[in-house]
Length: 117
Picture 1: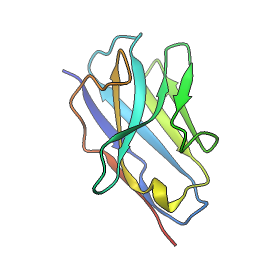
Picture 2 (picture 1 turned 60 degrees about the vertical axis):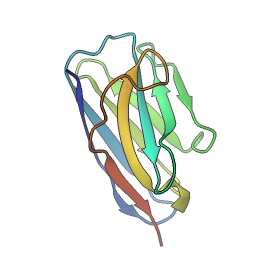
Picture 3 (picture 1 turned 90 degrees about the vertical axis):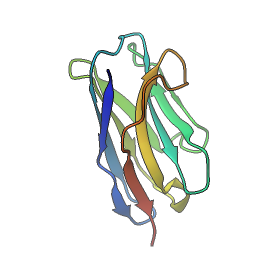
Picture 4 (picture 1 turned 90 degrees about the horizontal axis):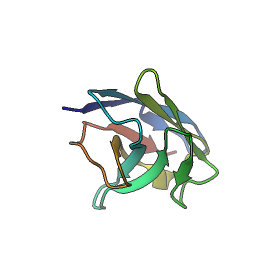
């Protein structure tokens, strides 16, 4: 069984920064993508960023150039550095993993990010 604990969310003003952390417990194949997703009220959960074991990264168009995903392979932990935050980035952020961009495991509690002046 794989579980996730997301942390690092909070409330910031537009233009601010936050660094999210994902701590995964359980065995995840090394070749699985590690990913961040987010869900805003009234919207479907969407993919934000992915990273492979070789550190190949992808981003949604809405965050490219502002967010950066990274990972610590030894600790099965990955991160999302979020800069130049905008009100539209307000959401609950989740991490997960899978062979493709489709999440393989059950969702954790997520961490709330609120961007507001």
